[in-house]
Image 1 (tube, rainbow, N blue to C red):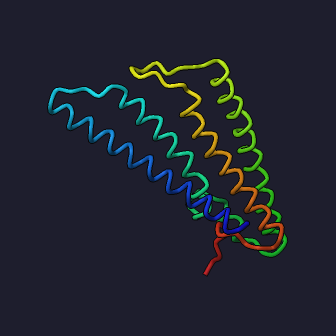
Image 2 (cartoon, rainbow, N blue to C red):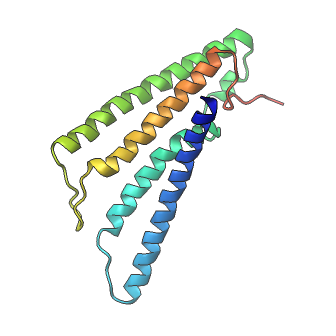
Image 3 (cartoon, helix red, strand yellow):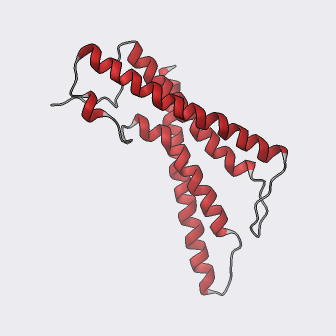
Length: 165
């Protein structure tokens, strides 16, 4: 299971990087096309969708890599059960917030699908498609948070708890 989860987080990081690359290629193509008086429709729309996808897919990867802002200043100044208790409380708070975002994100995507909401750009896109990347990213982030909480409860220190040297 550990190998699967680590591959899931790494895959999300790769997908996030791929979306950044797609943004770069879209913008570069638009710049070159303008030299020839050609306008590519909806480049801004797709760049925005790809930016949102990249941001949300990167959440779990960045969390597992220790890149998010954390309460380590307070937590690392404590020892033993106090440290573990503070860490568990912090994890429960963030899991609650991300669970809330996941739940309402799912409703948001579902309503876009049910009501056939379409983008307003030159190229009409069913909005549930780009919104799904947000939901998938948040779901994997929630899995990463619960994964770390389970590790903490088992007495294993996840990588985000930095030891002072």
